[in-house]
Image (cartoon, rainbow, N blue to C red):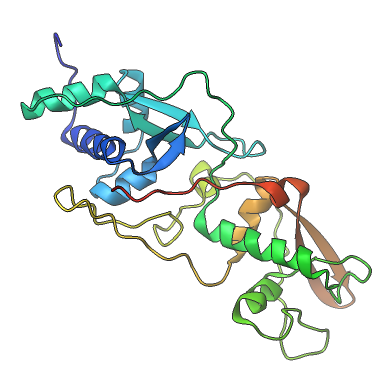
Length: 268
């Protein structure tokens, strides 16, 4: 291979995990091939922090990458897959026989699946349910399918029809913060706290092939719906009430009604 590039230990570990995904047909599917993963997927699986490392490995030709963000997001959301060069480098360092990595199609650019954090996907599913139910919100008569965060939670837990009527004991969650503030790119990707926002959890075991799944949160959170608004998958409407803070209502957009999320495939 000639002179090998200088890599840190965490770079090699990340390459090993991405090779494992590609060989075992795990991860996300893109351009006709499995084996793709977000940086945070690799970090959770390997226990290594990799800020800018995967981007650097891509620049060296050891990884391929694709931007899978919804169009409205300002910052790219990269998924990575090991290249044949990266797999050969790892095999050489391990003094093992190189394995063949089937290349992703350079012509198939018709992928429609986009990255949606697990919590936001749950919220989007509930907003879709609200659209199908066609039940009006008491805060916006004549406009069906609008929901507060509290309404969405009640849809999940099965409390009545999910709508909190005015004057009842269930107070809707209110949000009077400005949506147009500058958003941290990491928050925009929807994984600030390392909780169940990701598609799967930590604990990769290269011997057993184990990558434990983490169930998504049971009910949506405010930041989940805000992410949908920033991504153009939902819209927000504030209703002013006399003597009270504005009530924030949410409904899916046309794009949110047809969006397809990337789905994680467990390695075989």
